[in-house]
Length: 321
Image (cartoon, rainbow, N blue to C red; front, side, top):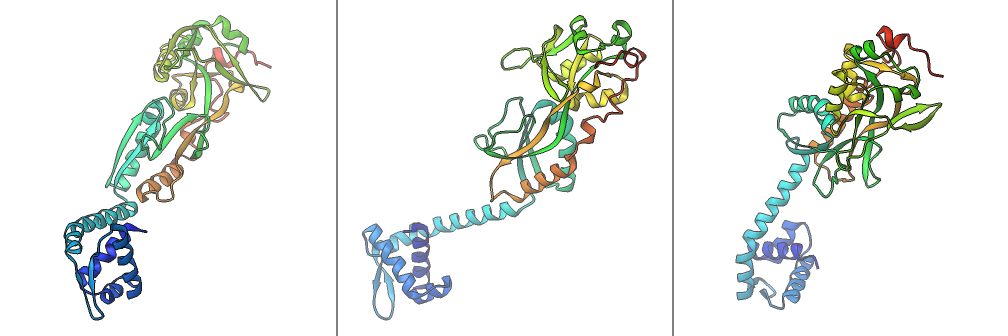
């Protein structure tokens, strides 16, 4: 038995004083109303109405149930209506999760633009490098760089993320540029280590269509990708920087790309969310907006022409075959 429906039918019959009137109000038949009330009486083990051929009246037990349940049912009905309305609204809170650099460099401009379009939207942004359980942690939308999220979520690849070997013009003027991957062993290098494990992350390259990994001796090893890039900008060594962080300084000339033919681009930036048909309209609007604004992501990766080195030391280095 559907208790909520049965109680709703009982309250309507008690308010109107007639099964026929209750049936008209609910768009059903008097027989269906009578059946729902009988089922409720059998379920509770009490008689709720005195019945006659002409009218029905509440019993003492029926009156007590009516007095106690009417206000509660009204509050529940209003709460359900509010929830349905919220699902259609373009106002309210959107909870978002992303890695630190993605949140600061990619999402902040996006959130600002979306907020201007929908001023009733509020954001709760969580920045963390671990993969977020969007269901368990009540996250509406996640953004993650690297490999695709697991199959339990809907994921969209927005744009590729390149791993670009680069150095400052000052470093190259003093130490020269590597001509081939093997030359990295004699250069000063800036590395990255995973915050959770503290293990150095090997550099990743594309060689003849295959992905290869190479460990390098790091004179500086950072657990934060932006600190890693700052070390490279300060001329402390060569680093392999992701294109989200590296695009702007490479385009400005503050950094110089190296060994461009070996840039790996197998990773990407992914937008992901739980598979929910009843997604609030504000979340659906944001997902569509983010996909439209970030698809392709030319701002966050570099074309072949942009990966050509500009400094003499790098430009005149022998080509690695």
